[in-house]
Amino acid sequence: GAVVSQHPSWVICKSGTSVKIECRSLDFQATTMFWYRQFPKQSLMLMATSNEGSKATYEQGVEKDKFLINHASLTLSTLTVTSAHPEDSSFYICSATVPDFTQPQHFGDGTRLSIL
Amino acid sequence: AQKITQTQPGMFVQEKEAVTLDCTYDTSDQSYGLFWYKQPSSGEMIFLIYQGSYDEQNATEGRYSLNFQKARKSANLVISASQLGDSAMYFCAMREDPSYGGSQGNLIFGKGTKLSVKP
View 1: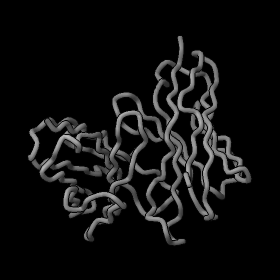
View 2 (view 1 turned 135 degrees about the horizontal axis):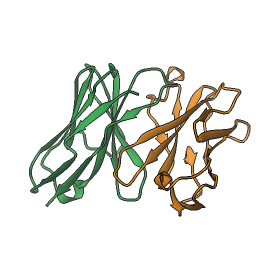
View 3 (view 1 turned 30 degrees about the vertical axis):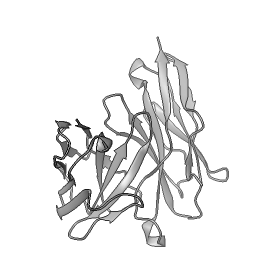
View 4 (view 1 turned 180 degrees about the vertical axis):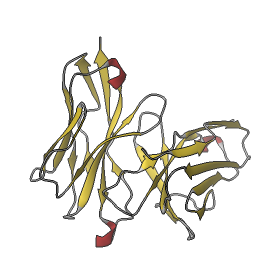
């Protein structure tokens, strides 16, 4: 099946640090990538939709200046959490897909972010 | 209003028994896809099975089958012969056809059901 690589798996850093998370589709060209956030024992919450070569579309309530998304190629999207604070601590997970809505989204393994 | 409803926060099943995880959905679109994902405690999302809105037959993938009742807007997951490794969170999700507008093609998730398999 399709493989999506997400890096890093774990990040622990001090408050005020900016953290970059990479999401790569390894064996297919992902026209669209999605970024989700998941709190403990809750479902996945869509943060933003990232299309190659265009600006990301953010969901209501998600600060685009806090969560910078770049989708520079068909295989790579990055999420940068700028000036992270403890309330940004969470599990972040990306998915990659092709335009065909009948196809599943393929997920990275997620990134556990802890801000001290 | 919730688009995907999973009414069972937690379920227990005896090893080797079958279990049904419930999912109902709400959409006015005629064209959509329904998906089930498994999330173990390690966090990764594992795709299990897909059902298209126009599919007349229920989808099956190994021990997984989907009981699709379109008129009732339900898409229940059936796991046969449960194994200890099936213990995980299970999410039902829907992807609407973006060509009808209003959808970006993203997955809409339910709140999930935590399945625990007892030895």
